[in-house]
Structure formats: structure tokens, C-alpha cells
Length: 370
Image 1: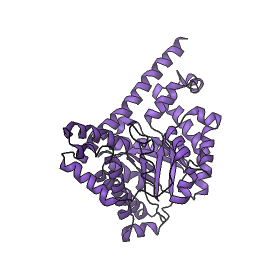
Image 2: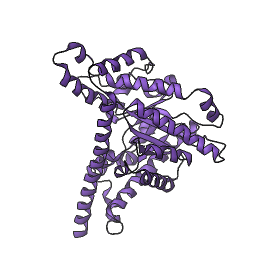
Image 3: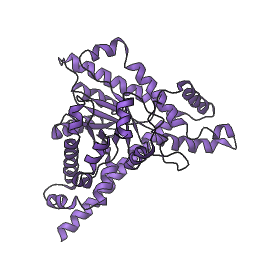
Image 4: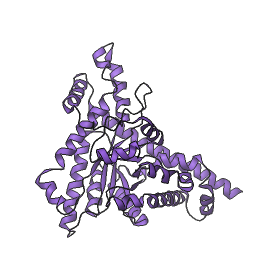
């Protein structure tokens, strides 16, 4: 047993890994991580950009596609093959958990973040192309894509809602999930257990943005400066309180009676960006039942080495609210923080995707010339 196993068996939190590379699939690294207690995989355009451009394990397949399909179609062939291979590795976890874990996430193209119908079409296409019960298609929680969450759930498709930065938006995501399940049930589906979802609440980036605003406003105010590094965990704990409140009561019980699964909060972006903060600042502080923490491989290694398995996600909710209130009193609006981070997050994924398309186009031209 490892601390990752303890995290799941003792505290009900599923550790996932926020990375996917073809060499991990070929050399057994992902399988070994699963043996150590990893129970799921998340990916995004930035992860695939680094993987595809940073190693030669994709070159043979890409070379075979050059000249037969457009570069972007070739990219999706590479991605889908990796996702399918990872789904095979995680399938025993999915089966042994009764369909509650063992998922692999793949994201729609970042250019669709403000396109409701485009997102619907792309999400359907990925589900139908991959067609495995343990795939989660990632949809961003932008205002334009919240309706897509409802629509995909209403069609019985499992999704990972990504890029959530505020409690207000998180509540909208939960509502889209619940109303989607209700629509699915109203369509005549009696067993809702085949639909799974997680809501990915981003953590470390919140502190990065809030700390910047604190330092701009503090002017030597020691009390305000003392709030650096506290906003992200405080907000996440308040989000967990919202989760606990929304998934009880008659409305939820009616869905649960039909086999519906809770949409678990997933803590994303949990590596520490500020070297002054502990390496597990966003892991040890957010442990609790019905949650997921998706960690980059370095954070997984740190947790295996010195993680602490103690329930913390609902510790001192009153203190967490006090942190947010004190920030508001200082002029730091968490909704504005969230809007900034959402814009930056969408732009970052889009830039990674565009850079990779340029790199692949150049590689295709070189191969054609050769």
C-alpha cells in the first residue's frame, strides 16, 4: 500500500495524474503509476503539445499520416490513440470500482471555448469516436459552454467540466449537471448510473493571481500580506461546502434513486507555483470524500514520498469564508479574479494548440520535402 492507496481507501479521494505521454504507455510507466494507486488520467492541449513536440515516439505515426489527412486531423489521430491506450490501462480500475473511477479525460479543441454548438458537436464526436465507458470529454466552464454541460449529460455522455475558477460558476455547473440528469431521466432512461462527471476547480492559479493583487494593494499592510497563499484553498473549501449542500435533499435523492452519481469536485492545477509554498500545499489541504485530486507527476512523486493522509477539505469553513471576506474588504473581487483566470486559461490552451499545429505543419513540410 502507498499513500495514494491510503488517500482513496481511508479518505475517499481519488488521486489522478495530470499528464499523458506515449512513452509512458509504451514503457509501462502509466501501468506502474496505477499499481501505486493512481485511479485516473487528465490531459489537455498543453500536455499533448509538450508530449508530441518533446519526443520522437509520435514521429512514425505522424509520418504515415502526412499527405493523407490535414495536419489537425493527424493530431487528433495521435491524441485518440493515446487516449484509447490509456483507457485500456485504466479499465481494470473502472471495472473494479463499479464505474466510479478509472477515467481518462480528453479535451475538445480550445478554439471552441466560446462556441456552444461547436462544443456540442465536438464532444459528441469524441464520445462516438472513442466509444468507451471510462472516457470523459472535457468541456470548459465558460458561459457559452455551460449549456453544453447540460446538453451532453442530457444525452447520457460523461464529461469533465474544466477551467472552473469561481464558486458562482461552480454552482452553475452543478445546476447544469443536475438538470441534465433530470432531462435524461425524462427522456425515458431509468438507469442513470452510466453517466459520470467531475467538476475541475482550478487551485494554484488562484493564489498566483490573488497574491499579485495583494502585493499591488498592500503598501506595507502586514495583515493583508499575511493573506498571500490562502485564497485558493479557502475558496476550494467553500466550493466543497457548496457540493455537500447541492448533492443532498429531495431533488438529488430522486436522481440517486435512479442510479445517478454525484459530480465530484476535482482539484486541478495542484502543483505549487510559488517556491515559497510547501510542495503539497494544494494536496494535503484538500483531502476528503467524493473528491478527486489530479496531480502532475512531480506532485504525485512528492505525495508518495511525504504526503499526509488526513481529512482537511472541510476543516475551518468559517475561517475560509473569513479569508475571502478580508480579501473583499481590501478590494480584491474573487469574481474578477476568476474572470481574469478564465480568459488566461482559455488563451493558454489555445496558444499551446496553435503552437503545436505550427510545429506539426513545419514537420509535415519537412517530411514531404525529404
